[in-house]
Image (cartoon, rainbow, N blue to C red; front, side, top):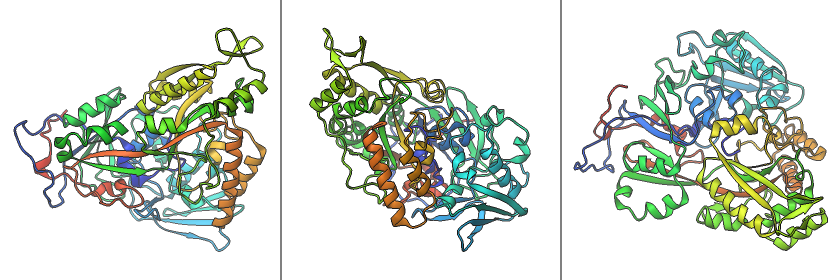
Amino acid sequence: MREYPSVLKYPALLSLLLAIGLSACGRPSADQVVNYDLEYPPENGGTMIDATRGEPSGLITMIAGEAAASAVAQNIFSSLLRYDKNLEFEGELAESWNISADQKIITFKLKPNLKWADGKPLTSADVLFTWKLITDDKTRTPYASDYKLVIKAETPDARTFRVSYAEPYAPAVNSWAGLDILPKHLLEGKDINNTAFARNPVGSHYYQLEKWRPGEQISLVRNLLSTQGQPRIDRLVSRFIPDEASQFLELMANNIDTMSLSPVQYARIFPARPELQKKFSLYKELGNSYTYLGFNLKHKPFDDIRVRKAINYAIDKQELIDGVLLGMGEPVASPYKPGTRWSNPNLKPYAYDPAKALALLKQAGFKKNQDGILERNGKPLSFEILTNQNKQREMSAVLIQRRLKDIGIDVRIRVLEWASFIGRFIKTGDFDVVLLGWQLAIDPDQYAIWHSSQQAPGQFNFVGYKNQRVDRLLERGRMELNPDKRMSIYHEFAEILLEDSPIVYLFAGYGLQAMHKRIKGIDNPAPPAGIGHNSQDWYIPRPLRRTEISQ
């Protein structure tokens, strides 16, 4: 979902997903001319500023289940493994790992002398504790399914953690790159679903929490006991600015260093403003995400496939790509990144066909009343689209509203603040239709999103999708080690999903990022993992830093 994180975290992408906002309280004088294109040697220090639309509900990712939380938390917590710039596995807390010949046992050896930010030792007992926590049925998490396949977890010694599976599990290694390891000494015996630790965490990664100002910002400072060494930038601050236009004003005023741009800002405003081009570099990349319209299949009339498919035909997806994204997006027909091996090339999006939509609705028993609204048994086809404060989604909702009105469907739009949206509606299933997005893992396993068992409050199958064939394919796919066979399984899965239309795929948009040129050390061109893969090595030369005062 567009604000939910991937089923797996991406440590390499920390700054881009993060919206690391930093507070700074000064800038070079207005008449000072600064050449940001000069080269400077690496040095430590400085503050980096970013902005995020949504304030995290908490910083325990397994509980929060949202991108706003994981973006900050991935700077605080470490996993056993992570992805390098080429999207290959490398150790994070783990010094090494070994997979048995039968593919059923993974043994991790931790790096020596690991510590939490409070100085306590970080050992295999913490890893075992975290595994027990995420697999505890009392823990309200959407991520448990990967880890419940472990039939035995053990700690032969303080630096060794070993897991055993009943059968080979294809995403096994991938899953351990996505689990934030939590401190046993601070959380043992606590209710993980309702703990003050979520707002005052202690981790082991590059940064630690400095201060959380509700409704304003989160600031992080360098963790001197980091298990990964020291980052060059001293301080990260993530400011909560829901409105995209306000973010852009802050960017132009030199108050934030980076933000995700809208297509208008990227394609029209920046090219027309030479002064902005002198200060900012722009980046464009197609990420692992897509935007969709999702139906609550437990609510009528969305339990009727004819209604869902009719709405799919009634929406002009190319109009959304052209009008909302200014052409900077791709059509989507499967829940995978376009162009990857997991995306079924034979699938095409539902064509824009109002006549076919009306024919399906007629089959489903709907007729237009005197006001031109479709109704069945005296009940109008009317519903509310819920979305969060995101201009692309709001604009998409308006265009969808207009197209559905054309065929006689009455649609209302409700835009909510992120935390309320998730807590009051998504986690409770109290909605008819949502307009959201999914950020996906690199591994193609989507059991947590689409398997019928994943519908409890807080889990990811909140649309209530249930298909026994899909369940079996998802179960087979995660156990299949042959890449070509896995690909065939997920192609078939995507074909069924497209036919069932539990969601309407709208588009996969390009990530459009502006980065202030004061931030040095960014790889150009960007590697497969994106520009943020080495953000710990980014630096801010002293002459380019803002004047900062203590807060």
